[in-house]
Length: 376
Image (cartoon, rainbow, N blue to C red):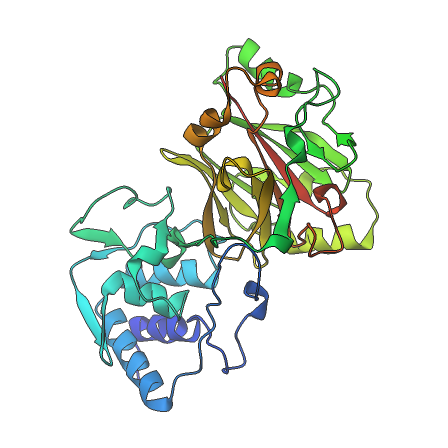
């Protein structure tokens, strides 16, 4: 029987749909129990044959109405799992579909089929800033590219006590020329030598001012120079098919630890760091969890900071500038002497730290980042 290119694209897309638990394809690496970020498991119980058949019929009928070039865009995004930059897929936003007793908008259904089978409502999602539909309210055409979206992290309240981490980094560094860095109980400071000299040189030469600098660490050793960030969005990755940004794989590391090498291999697409109007967001593009500690993610009166676990495909507002400035008190000696105190976010790939892990401090994590924000 003669088969059109369109029908072939539709079949390939259906085969690339997000797996559900019980079909033998579910990626258990992306999920887990516990943790501080409520990245709820996107694995759902395998549907009964009737529901599966109904979903397949509905998806096929929708995809067959989409233009061939748009199907190719969707397939590129789905098969590369967001690793290849794909354009927006603009489709009518007002079209509703019905699956069983539940109604879904067209974008929501596509996000459910191709990324998150347990997705129920658009309030669970955050659009990435790279998308044409970002910031638009009720447009006639909306982007339906599932990899231009992320799931929102829901923070636990109150947080579990085992995941609390001492707020030691509020102690002033030993040297006025050092960057506020990871501090362990006992006062040991692993600070980046030469401080901000790498990024200050950019300002002195007249180039665009940076809004943050990023340091990459392997255990207690910083690898490479500080990476100064001027653009609103930065991809930090180890291996990405298509993309620009901070490539950790190009840095020269002398660490031969098997654990470090194993974690390096799992960084993959890494994270996306984006400065938006309400703060700085971190989107986990990799296939494994990341762990984040930030002064603005917790109660300002707290003496401890929470280490947040962020699952693949999820976003979290890792830093809030307004909240950070409110932490600065005019009569506070530490903030007066060290104005950057509290303006640092730490991110560990794959391995967490804290009292519920064998690693008590981030400097024991194999691969991690320190993001230091410019307060000027």
